[in-house]
Image (spheres, helix red, strand yellow):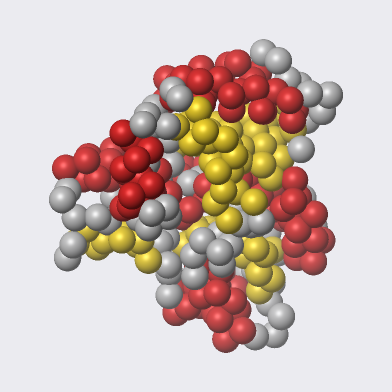
Length: 280
């Protein structure tokens, strides 16, 4: 184990990339009525989206408890880590980072460095992966945390969802707005600004939204070298691969990977979403 352990939460949507990269993932929970599942542990993505489509109950997401974070931190410290860098979903979207901070305070001794990613899904995931790479290279916790905080303002996210129903059900937009958007066939392109979900643009078709995301990414990536990119999707791997191929053909990227939205983020996005996240 590296002297510095890296922790994130399941909204990073790292999935199978986490363990081999040396990233510890603390799961959020998803509740369908009386059934409770740990994100990425008890519920596969396919099972989640099937339940989402079939259930008459709106799923509820819940952050990990401070006790779960403290248990994770102690296990890593007992296992040989000297310090921990813990990077998470912002407080504007979830209480997860507050729970992590409470646990870090309980552990004490300045052993846990908490970093607010100000982003979500693969944006958070890419920050955690970079932190793990730096830890493996021998960087100390302060250096890693400083590098992450320097990257936070550089993370850009643009995504399109084919239906506003799930955002409305989850309370991210008004229910009436969701209904009107679906009736009028308005497709929003969403972005995150300082950790807050915002509407970047409205278009009339989902395909136009996808094209516009590619155009935005192309514009932002033009003239850059070595940008980190992730294409996110919810049960739309072919579409995600198509977007990835389009960006690879026009930009000089440092890395790109396809990221499937897990249950926590998928609760609000629903099936069929696609987006691009990049750090430049």
